[in-house]
Image 1 (spheres, rainbow, N blue to C red):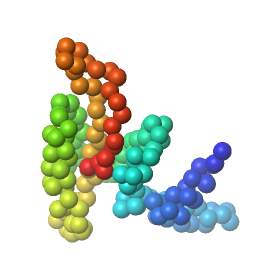
Image 2 (image 1 turned 180 degrees about the vertical axis):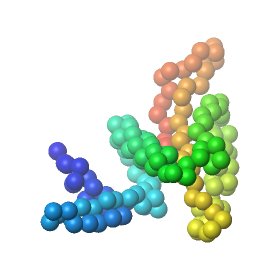
Image 3 (image 1 turned 135 degrees about the vertical axis):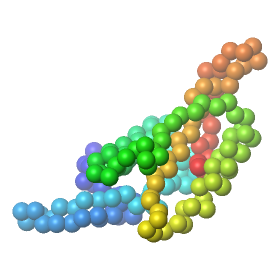
Image 4 (image 1 turned 120 degrees about the horizontal axis):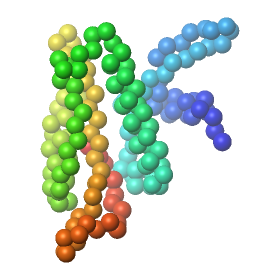
Length: 158
């Protein structure tokens, strides 16, 4: 069984983590890492090859990172969720496959132009974390919910 240190080393070697702080503590080197968001994604091919347990683990890791980021925000002296327009909402919508693709494309079109923005005195960096998954299977012709829906390809995400 691999240790946490081995996992961190693999993530750092793969460029997913980078050293944020390094200092000597009683002869040892203590390192603090941060996520490199530009290297933290996976390809559609990789997503398609993951098992359900792999997806469960990846989702848990994403939620842990999101929780850590939000906690760090709240720990700042200047945190003001109302003034900073912080939002965490969920909307359940019924979509056909075509409507789903249209919504994903619309979200990409809304977000993509801003990804290249750099820091400036009039900009604050915001974290956007779209999470998308089906919560209920489509109804059958008789109007009951189909709980035996087949697995779907995760696609390339948002």
